[in-house]
Length: 236
Length: 236
DNA sequence: CTTGCTGGTTTGCTCAACAATATGACCCGC
DNA sequence: GCGGGTCATATTGTTGAGCAAACCAGCAAG
Image (cartoon, rainbow over the protein chains, first blue to last red):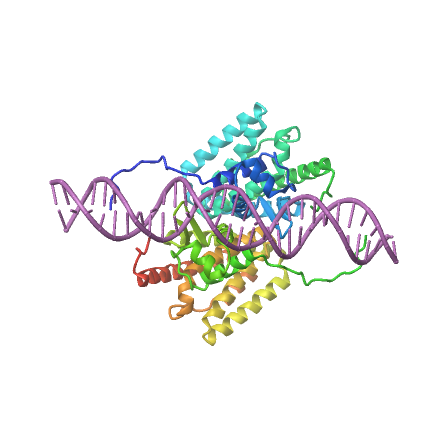
């Protein structure tokens, strides 16, 4: 049963039109080109993307499975909005999953995982020092994703990726006009050191790191909501 | 701005045809009436459910978001199958989320949560002693769901519910011919006692409980796969 | 200021159709 | 018999039109 050819990493992937529509919409939402709360008119989208309304509806169902979009009976599709409670929730869930990663890492002490984390910490610091906000955010996401990956559970990784994606929903608007971001100092190095130490220290530092992030995001969300002017800061 | 009427808890919920189709399919899959690996023909389903093929496709996309069904380009929809690796993964992910619940519980020591858990433990024991396998399984699910709920994170709860649902996919076939199940002794009482104790004890006992469950499910999965006769026990 | 109507807009869903792809049968040279 | 082709068929991917029901805003009437 040995496969005759190995190392064919280049997996062929044909994309259906629906998948392309999903990708396009996801990109548009996460980049902030479509603001949270915006209603998505099926006919308009179909025209814009150059495809049928039915296909748009399928794409929307997929996106709703990702939590980027919400359906309201007979009222259509809206880009998901993140409330203050959601931010807390996202960070609570992230803490749970990342703690699992930290604990696994504290057990098996996989050197390549540590190396990946160290590299990412370097990248983040470099991006931070040259003021590249987008690169800092991307590095941060990958750092934490790598941490979760240390747990070795695909489902946990996917869940965490989804949480990060929802989180990006808040940042979306800010990432373009990146004035508000990047004020916090980069403490991933500190976190990495703690991860190299005792499990208790690692989880404690992780909790602190995430709580700081949550507070920062909460602050930013309030700011953006106020600027948008339409909704109360604590309830969407 | 005080609302004139309060306490209208009875939320009205209209179900679209698509949602009904999702519910019907989910029920059919989880109850084992449609076995894992079964290809779902769109036309046949549309005829069976008495609705349009497009609506079936939308329902399938939603189910694929739940992980109950998988899409293969130009090849259609198949009921998801759970491999041995999946079982390990599901339990690893469950452990991460339930540990979060246990830890939260160890902190706030919410008495009503403890009461709910105790009640569920009672129910499980009662069902166990009268040999009601389905009730034992249901009680088990609710026990662990309640534990996760103690963490107070809706997203964590939903994730856990999804894991339990995927797990049911394996049990589905067995729940009907419930010969294989219910052999393991009921140790939820023990787990509950540990949850009342120190955090370290609680997480240790939880890990043991889940690992036993994983082993049991792994055994059952192999058994069912062999009985089905078509697939190797370790790879679907 | 609330109630009820009214017309336009949008969704939920259906139906019919067509191209592209997968699947299996059949046939063939060896 | 077996690997390799060709062809027919089934099924999916996608489209486009179309209709009933639900929603929304505005306006008239009490």
